Length: 339
Ligand code: UFG
Image (cartoon, rainbow, N blue to C red; front, side, top):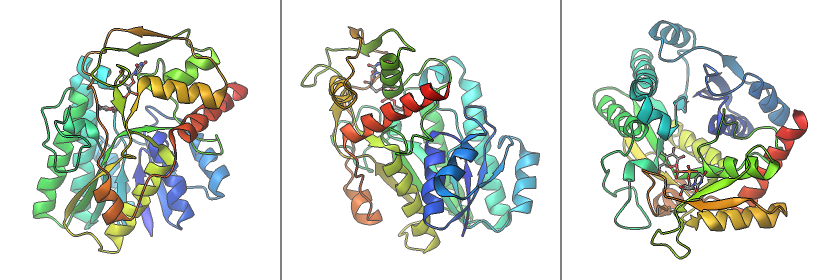
């Protein structure tokens, strides 16, 4: 079975390629390397013993994309990760986000239609729920007005895929990720933020290793037990495994609807301070942090109702917060020794 993984040299993509290979899938990666590096292909090969095929081009380019599909019209499925994902940047440069995230999706769907490729797994986000009224948040919670152009690209993408499925043979599983963190146990692949990280965990590990002087904790006046915001952090390998299950479900025609939506989280909410304390415990490092004002646009509390994913996919996230933080720390240390 042959699977295209777009964004396959990126953070979640690379971990998913490894899990697909473990299950015997043949993988082709397409990535324009705008936020990742070609040597990730070598690392994947080091982990799995199998070198995935890799093509470097931009999926927003209709010519390169249709040329690719002409040569690979026998795909059994596509996992589409390739997208920009920085919330703040999307506010400052919305067109960059709409052009890239929507443009690439349209090109992929058009080629799926042309070549009769039916199975799509799409990276969506819990951002579509905004601040949900009812927690934990289930898949039928209302979709709220997006808080950023990035979030809007995820909402619009879900709609484009759904509309397309009504008039073509395209079927899709939309996976709404909560907060993916951590790295592969081998410490050969992980998150590689370019420049200053936006996300909490790479900021923690970079601070602990001395790249950043101080972690700023955004807000301590939230209505939570310790005043800091709560998220559902999920280990990237658990997340990757869910993609394999989703692809298998589509290939085996086990889905119940043309469009299925699953939350991918652990179901546990942790505060920023709890994440910091977990990090300090597993790393034996004291983290330099300071409480500052809230970050605009942040929601207070969000964590997943995972029962639908657990029951329907037969998948459940396994790793604890401590395991997530330890793997993130091991990855940061491995990056340092390579420099
Ligand atoms: N945080 C800090 N200091 C930092 C970075 C983050 O205190 O330096 C806090 C945030 O305020 C938040 C928590 O850590 O409370 C998690 O923040 P992240 O930036 O790691 O993650 P977000 O929950 O803000 O973002 C995630 C995804 C986005 C998605 C968003 C939707 O990374 O892609 O959820 O809510 F859009």
